Length: 540
Image 1 (cartoon, rainbow, N blue to C red):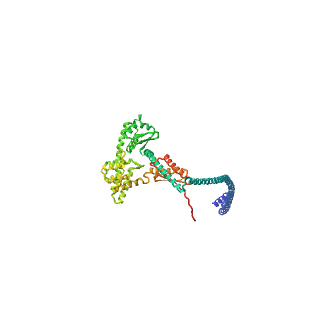
Image 2 (image 1 turned 90 degrees about the horizontal axis):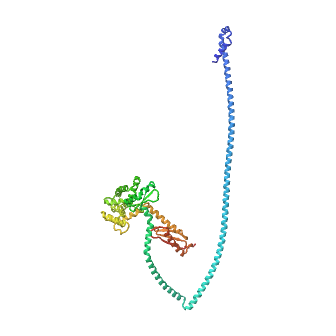
Image 3 (image 1 turned 180 degrees about the horizontal axis):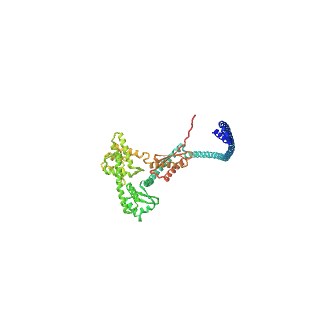
């Protein structure tokens, strides 16, 4: 390409003015043009190489210069950043040093205060030591005076005794024997008179005191338990509903109480109405009926009677169903319809917070298992265990304790003598003549004492024991106190150094009085105070 261009340049510029020469030199023209073109091409190539190299050198120099500038700027930035970090580290170290110095100063102040307090305690101890030394010195002087007076009294007594012997003409042994005989006769007469007098006083006060103690014990023990076991609560949406339940001039609440046979208590307690009755079935009917009336919203005497009648039918159906379910669960069949109904009523009865129906089923299982292990009739044992508390379902309607009521009912409805005797004697009220009675009583005790069966009773028992011990240990001179025999007796250990025989008797009486004033308990609590002196030596 370069040679062709050079050829055109030579022919077009140099030989164009001479056409005759151009025609003559045509054969040589090609060679010359080619040579010229080659020379020119090589020159152009070298020129282009030179230009490219010069541009590359300039560009490299610029890049190096830019790199040096950037390196200098980065070095300056690094130096600035390093100085900033050094300043921050220096500030942090100064802050730490300042905090450490403050802590050291605070520690020094605390040490100074501690040293001052120790110095004050040392001074107080020195003062107390001086007081003790003075007291010991005065006590020693008083002891010397007392010993001197005692010696003088002994001398006077000896002189008086010798004078009496001389005047009476009796030896010391004879005089002592006659004096003791006279004193013994006088004491016997006085003792007999005192015994007769106190027996008469005790007989006069015994009857009244016994009645007072019995009534007081019942009142103290039964108040809280009765309130918990004879009431049910019904939640109401607002206080306006209380007015609707009461009705105009109280006609609604009177209709509800008359239809159900319970007492409805409406007080200042927000959001709650209390239903109170000893009969758990009536209380449950009233509670369910009141819930329905509150949901319905139509509360008037006619509607109340309708809802109560409807609820009573539902409860009767539930009672029958609960009795049949218990009978199936315990695998006891062939019961009289009235017995099944009574069994279902136990669903709504509790004893010391334990559901009586679940308790009866547990007793049935335990009695059956024990009888099976002993080779006895397990079916009969389960029957006796299931029906042992059936009297609790009718003790609101019949007089007497639930064992006798249950035995009479079972006998009336055709149960066997083993089942009747188990219901009558499961509380050891009579002599257990049949083995199934013993099994039922043992299973009844196991179910009642099972952990968690009567949780409220256990909590109250533990609380009562702790209260007894805490009250007794609060008296001066008492070291330890132990409540035993389910809280019916408290053993108190008194310090022999801090108490005497007379003060120990007073402490024992004060503890008994404190129990009477601060606690509610059935029966009586015996307080036994023990005071002894122990001296121990070791022989080596």
